[in-house]
Amino acid sequence: MLIIWDFDGVICDSDNIWAENWRKLLNSEKGIDLSEQETRKLLIGISERDKARRLEMHFSGLSIDDDFKNKLNELHDFGMKNLLVLTEGIRDIFEDKRFKQCIATGGNQYQNDTKNHTVGIDKYFTAANCFTADMVTRGKPDPEIFLLAAEKMQVPVTDCVVIEDSLDGIRSGKSAGMKVFAFCGATANNNREYKQKCREAGADEVFDDMKALHEALISLAV
Image 1 (cartoon, rainbow, N blue to C red):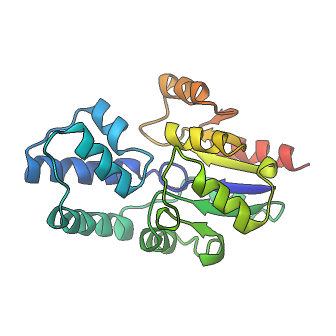
Image 2 (tube, rainbow, N blue to C red):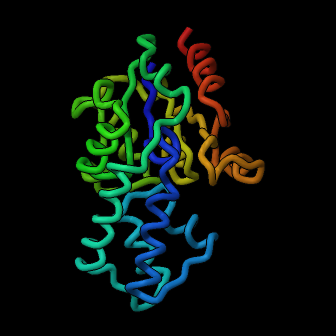
């Protein structure tokens, strides 16, 4: 069995860090004040490339230019190196040799490598089992990145379990023909309303605790 991990919102409670960087810069550089609803719709659970595309489609005349991207990357770089904390209980799953494991993330390779190093999981996840947004042409909710992960890890999609926190990620995993466990332990997601949205998006199970999720994975692997 292959576990395919999303990073932001699952391995680390980090979605709000990147979203806040976008919100700050959009306000200071473009005069745009995003609502909470717009933030979740436009900035959570997708690649940086797709965030820019969605914003430019949502706000007429908006251009996410190179100067904006450079300033954003500086903010992200600080966050990746200084603000990340590994989700409680997840290391026990990484240590479990009963499963194959990999990461499939909306971040690019540099971002993924930096994040993994910061939280000390680069001994579990290397270039051989990390799949990033710059390896595919279509981001979530398209299933391309999960299908790539299964192919490279040489595991049938029916033997894969995706661990996701975003609705687009859940839809992506289900479109790939995989079982999907939604993890809602992150600050913004740990509420009844969002858990119900995850179920409606197709999640097979919903968890807010890594110990319970680990037990469910063990049951599947038996």
